Image 1 (cartoon, rainbow, N blue to C red):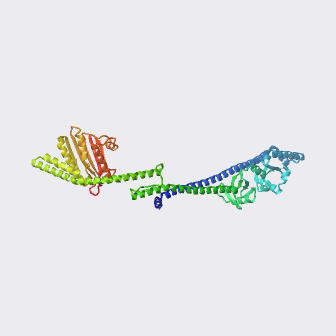
Image 2 (cartoon, rainbow, N blue to C red):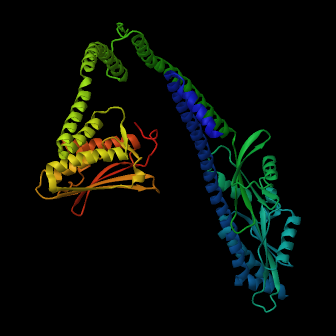
Image 3 (tube, rainbow, N blue to C red):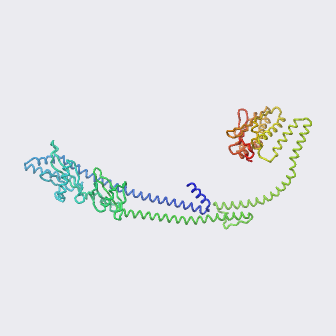
Length: 596
């Protein structure tokens, strides 16, 4: 189906005018380039989105790592406080001593120690630290702790109690009060690891996030929120809640472009290392979308304008080019109607160096040559008529020659001179074959009769110096072969085997039929001479100038190839001390089957 459609399109294109062909090529090229341009525009847009994603992702990765760093520092601080000998000893004194002085001194030491840790780790955005025991609470910042409701602190202490010495984070109150870490302190110096107190650390999440994002001015108004599981623990505003609700359905992408209340947002997220929290960033995509849309629309408009301009320019240029084509066609039409008409043109092509100038000059030159040839042919036609009249006068000559030879043969037979009679009969056979123009082929039997007649004449000339033999099955006598294709090879063998030597020359003619390939092979072998290597190729390329029998060899090879094809022909080679001429041709017995 596709092949048929392609054939129809090709035929339709072939039959259109040159103007339409060129215009079609130009339009296809324009639309291909436009398609590539649009694809490139899409690639650029995607690359911009990827750059945006990578930039925000890098910023998120840094922020997430920083948050993880501060949280880990606070956990490290809690570990140091848990194992601090001063805290361990003073908490143990408070728990086991009834002496007011010892308990007061222990409380005083704990206050100093907690304050030292608070001052040291305050850059980690710690709001306050409290060290709680059954008797009293030690504060690093009493006023800061009073801002936290008691029920929140109670929940943190309960969670720390349940964690049994592991740090536990409470993030449910991040929007209003920050996040909290609680950790149970046990007596590591006793075997039963009795409980001594509970450490509570408050982290100012708002201050931490402000410090991370205050210098981020790469994009307009970036917003962040932190979630743990299904709960937002920071920046719980309506947009964050909407984004969080929609992103609960996995998209399988590292970023999304989401629409919230008819506004677009570019959203990406990053997990905070070491904690089950996710840090999400969203940027208003409206200005970016408007910018990208404007660039895309402008690019499309420019492409369309370029297409229209290219079409208009192509149309004008093609019209300018096709007018010269139409002018040349008109000249041809005038010349085909009357070759003697004077062909005039509105344009002077004598100085044009392009193809149209060359075509017009060549056509004018060709028209002039045709006019001259017409005149010459007219004169030649007169001479031809005269030659035909003379040929009628001399056509009696071959019949006169044949009758004369018959008379000589009869006189030789009457006189009993059979040698002269045999030579005259052989000569008559040769003359009839060479002077007959009725056909271009013989059957194999008649060709061998001609060869026998020729060798018979040569035997009388060279007597015992010439020996020959013909090997051919009579079943192949009806094979049709080109006229006079074996006799020139025998003549060539005698010429080089006897006339240039005084030794005995043996000529063998062998005819072979290969039924499996359907071919007939003629072998003419002679001793006393050898062929030059690649003789036939050298004769064709005129590396050796053909003359005499060289022309005959080329003629035989070309006649066979013209009749039967390039797979057949004449081959010359040497076999031991024999020069071999081999002809290969199809085995054809029907006279209608040979090419004439």
